[in-house]
Length: 408
Image (cartoon, rainbow, N blue to C red; front, side, top):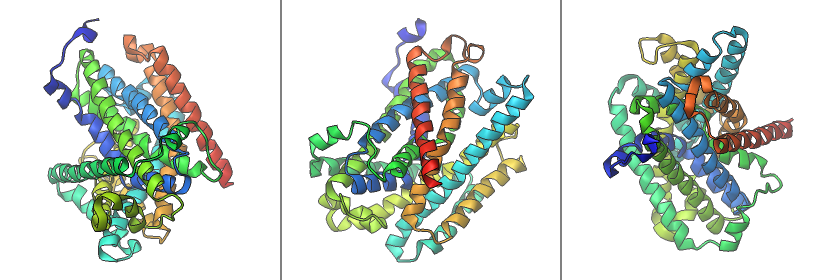
């Protein structure tokens, strides 16, 4: 009861937003811009419900992960290993399943990040994305290997660029005046013919599996007492809502300005910003994609490496070669895939779709752990959180299996 009654200052609340905005900075990348733009251009506002579902899902699941980190002072992967330590066969099976899911999703996301950044640079220089993506991947590798603390300052600078881009999309959404009736109709779950992959991409680009592991780790470093759970809840929900609003604004703007238009490159995506930026729309979109891509690309290899480190008891720094090699492999895989000459937009959409397919595995593990009294004590999921979590798991599982079946 004392936890609920405790008062927090505005300064406390502002400081609590850090871990949440780290997650938002991770998922507001080229994949979000591309998936939301293409969804609006191809299907209007009929998939707007996916944005609503994604916002609810990311608030619930990231909230569970953060609470787990604070209560146990351990990460999601460490809790999974500990809970099944007396059942080695089941532990190895679950750890292997999570490791495969996270690794595949990370490889896909990395290729999407590099390709998204390459689209932006290509729009500014005219050089093929097939050439730029591998070169940019090597630059990210050098940044992670040798820049040290400079990475933090780079992320902050690029984060400001992403915030500016978000504001521009919000203003544009208001300027173009979307049809309210269409917007309300889009809130009703419905998948138009051919829209399943786009639907899954929208969810996969927001509810990113490895972000739950990152959030648990970030929360335990930020807060050390269960008295601070309400502060953590505030610091999780507000950033997730803001991230969802940005995603929704991109889709609404695209659906209003670009419906029926093909989306093949950054120049096509920039069309939706012409009502507010005019001739500056193309360079602004290009720079925005670069900024968003770098922010996500720095987080992706770190996220995959951190998950595997927790599952297999590695150290999470350069002193453990396995951790460093994993960072390297995620980047190299992304470089190879991004440089194979696939259609950039199609590759980015496919990367988000892969994340959507593997999402149920991590959602299921997170719900299981946060429902365990032996782990969470009195801070287990409430009935509402459990119902919402199971619903998220069920919907993501059905969509994921449906997409796999459709590919066969």
